Length: 150
Image (tube, rainbow, N blue to C red; front, top):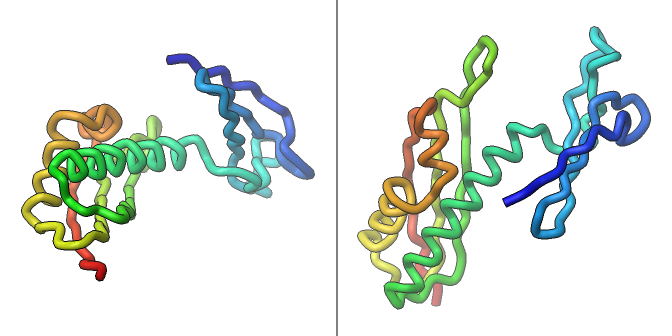
């Protein structure tokens, strides 16, 4: 896996902390910092996600991917999956994630709650590299709901 991150200097007016990541799979993602009027030289302009937001989003994508794949392999009629993540970070540097809660909402026809619970557990214990890695610094908790569709 490869990625190249380049400082753009400015993504737009007022941002001194713009970056663009070019992934090995050929995709581009912009990143920027928060607006900080007290420190304009190191301030972003809030034109793109923060790098740590992308870490959290990537973790959500990783585990949702696993959950859908596991449910499909179990021949369950899953039609949608959303994971809502809320994270807390350390107060001091390095400001690692210290707690992450993931709430899964799985839509499907007749998908058993036990199958969803098992898929989430397998993702977090065996398959999701991102959540397993973040679990080294953060207490990760999960919850879920199953929405039956006609």
